[in-house]
Length: 449
Image (cartoon, rainbow, N blue to C red; front, side, top):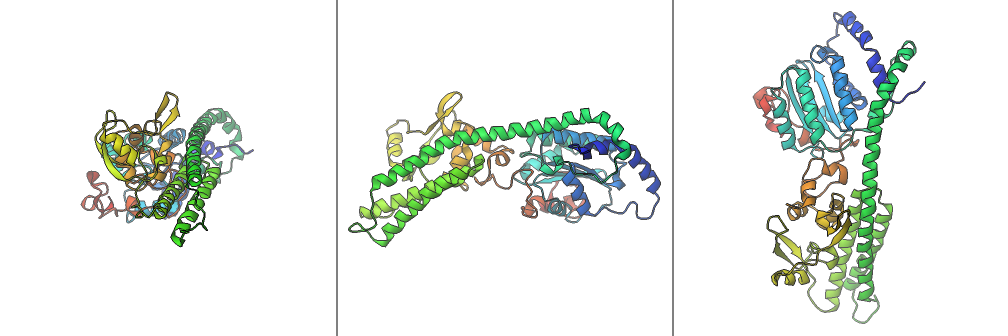
C-alpha cells in the first residue's frame, strides 16, 4: 500500500529498531566513520533534518523528528544538520549546498558548536549572521536548534522543496509495521494535509496576484499599441532612413513580444519580462519621433516613475511621498512641470480592495511589474518608504514574487538550482575560516561573509 508521506511514518515507527541497531553496531569497525557529504545531502532532499549516526547523542531521534515536522508544516526551505565534533569541516557549507542542490537556509550543529549559511534570495547574509548570533547561547542542542528553526521560519523566504512531500520510499521494509503504521496514519495525515493546504493557499495567492497584474499590463500594452498607431510611420515615406526604420522595427518587435510574454505568464514574476519589452519599445518610439523631427536622439533613461505610460523620463526631480522621505525620481516633462508648480504628479493608480491606490501602495505583486520598468539597482531607492518598497526589502519577497530588483536576487527558496548558486553565500572554511579557526567563532563569519 502506497501512502503519501510513507517515509515520515516509517521513520517514526522504526525508532526502536534503529536504536537497537545503533547499540549492536557501536563497536563495529568504521561505525563512527564520517558520513559522506553526498549522503547527508541525499537525506536532506528527503527530510529537513539529518542527524549523523555519530551524533545521535547530541540530538535524540524524537527531537529531530519534532524539528522536521515543524519545518515541514511551515513549508519553508530550512535544513538542519547535526554532525559529530570531528566531522571534516573544509568547505562544508559550500559542498553541502552543492550536493543538496536546493535553495534554502542551512544550519549545522557540529559537536557543541553551531553556524548557518543561506542563499541570499532566502535570507540576507546579515540576516543569517543575526540569526546565528541570537542562538549561540541557547544551551543544549535541542534548545538551540528549536530557537534557530523558530526564528528561521519567521524570516526565511520561499517554500519547501517538493522532494519532501513526494512520498519517496525510505527503503525500509514495512511488512511487519503496517498494522502499527495504520494507527499513526490519521495523525500524520493531518500534518501532511496542513502542508498541502499551505501550498495550495500560496499558489492561489499568486494566481490572484497575476490576474490583478494582467489588467494593469494589458492597459500598458494597449497604450503602447495606440502610441504606435498615432506615430503613423511608414518605412517607405519620404525622408525615412535606415535608422528610423530600425527604430520602428524594434518598436513593433517589442509590442509583439510583450503580448507573447503576457500570454505565457504563469506567475507574478513572469510579468517583469513584459514590462521590460514595453519599456524597450517606448524608447524606440521616442528615438524614432526625434529622428523624424530632426531633434537629437534622447538619452536612454528609465520611464516616468509616476506612470511608465508617460514614456521615457527627461530628468530627475525631487519628490516626497506622503509620510516618506525625500528622494529623486525620474519624471516626464509634464510631471516635472507639475512638481515645479507645486502640483501633484499624474500618478498611476490601480484597483485594490481599499479602492484606487498608487501602484507603490497596492501590494507586493506590483514589484515584478515595476521591476521591468526600473530594474537593476534603481528600484529599491525609488520605493524606499513606500508599502511596496517595505515589502520588497523583506527576506521573503524575492522568493514569492521574483528577483532582480537590485538587492533582491536569486532562485526562489526551495528551488532546485543544483550547483548554480553564489558561492560567497556559503563560503568560509571551518577550522580556519571562522573566527580565527573556531567553528562558529561566536558569530564571526570570517572570510565567508
